[in-house]
Image (cartoon, rainbow, N blue to C red; front, side, top):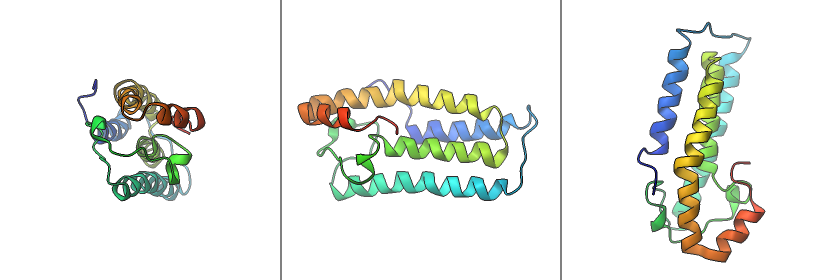
Length: 148
């Protein structure tokens, strides 16, 4: 496994960077900014939580650092729309902080998050899933997108 830093730590770091960037670049403002940011935040947490609940129901590992310990290939529920709803949820949460803080630089931070998670988390996880589940994972990958 290539990754060494848990994805939630990467996400929290990105959120903190969004916040700090508002001290360097004047933040944007619009009416109901906090409400819009909060609604998007809830959507991000809902995506992540629904995926965690499905993993628990299938009694497979939720630990992103140990995908080789997976016991089931979860393809139903939110996993029928995205192969990575937890990372998509973190992406949405980071997006909500861009809006909430008014962080222009957050767009670059969000691009970094996607690159990092693809390179150091998703690709190694997919390699592990291919080894564990073979053709079943390959078919799933052809029918369901990596992000959305």
